[in-house]
Length: 401
Image (cartoon, rainbow, N blue to C red):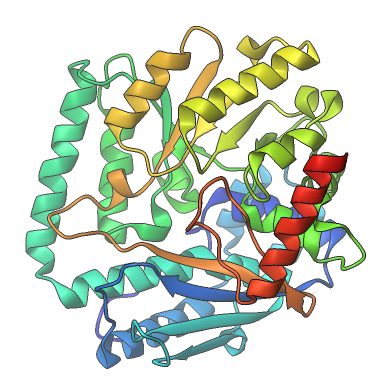
C-alpha cells in the first residue's frame, strides 16, 4: 500500500450495518446478494494506480477481526443479542467475495457477491476506502485538509452563534468522508464544543462513537426492505415494506425503531405503515423527495391513525446542509420531534467537489432487486425490465387496493 491503512477497525462502519446484520443473522442467514459500485460524477476517473491502491486497502480491511474490547462495547448496546456477538467473534471480511478491476467508464469497477451476512458489511468500508484513496491521490492532501478545517470551524461558529438552529443532529458521513482524519476531527469538535440551541447527538461511525463516548446512531437502510421484500421470489414486491417491518418488529420489538419510507416510494410505504407499526416505531426517516411535503404527509398519516405526532420523530437525511436543516426544523419544530443525519456537508466539505459514489444491492438470491425512491436518479438496478415490473406492481396496488 502507498497510503497508511484506511480502515483500522471492523467497528469502522455505520451502526445500521450491525442492526441489520443481527436481523439478517437470525432471520435470513442463507440469503445471497450482489452489490455493485457506481460513481455518479460524470467527470471523475480513477487511475490504474488508484484502483491498485483501493484493492490493497480492501485486502488490508479483510485481514481485520473484532477485538474482545470492541465486542464488549457492542454488547452494551441494549438491543444486541449474545448470539450475534458470538457470530461477530468469528466473523471477518473475505477478499474472495470481491471483484475489482478497471472495466468501467469511471475506471473503477467493484462488485461483491456472497451471503447477505457478508456482503452487507462490505459497503461502507469499501466506499470510505474509495473516497479517501481518490482524494489523497488526486489532490494535495495538505491543501484539502486546510480547506476542510476552515469550513468545519465556520460550521461550528454558525451553530454557536445561532445563525442556524437545527435541534438534534448526527454525523452520517463515513461513506463519503474526505478521510478518516477529517471525520474524526468533525466528531471531536462537534461533541466537545458549544453549539447554541443545536445539539450534536452522535455519529453513525461506531468506531468514532466508541472513541469519543458519543451515541452510535442508525437503524435500517434500503437494502433491508429491498432484500426482505424482494429476496423471496414468491412475494409481491409492492408489499416489501410490510414484510420488512414485520421482521424488524420480530427482531427488535419496540427498540431500534426508525423506519425508512422510500425504498418502494413513500406512498406505498404508508399503505403498510398501519396503526401497529406506526405505534411501535418511534419515527420515520426521509431520504428522497421534498422534505417539507414528506413531513406533512407523515404528520397527516399519524393524525389519520389517531397518533400524537408530537411523540414521534421525523429524521431527515437527504443531502443536508445546515441551511436546509434550519429551514426544515423551523417548519416542523412545534409539532413533532425533528432530527437530522448530516453526511457529506460535515465529513467532506472542501474546495474540491465531493464524490457521489454508492454501492447498492443489485441482486438477491439470484434475481434482480430495485429501489424506487421518491425522486428519479437515486435508484440502481441492472435490469430495466425488472424495474418496470416493480413499478407496475406498485401502481397496480395503489390503484386497486
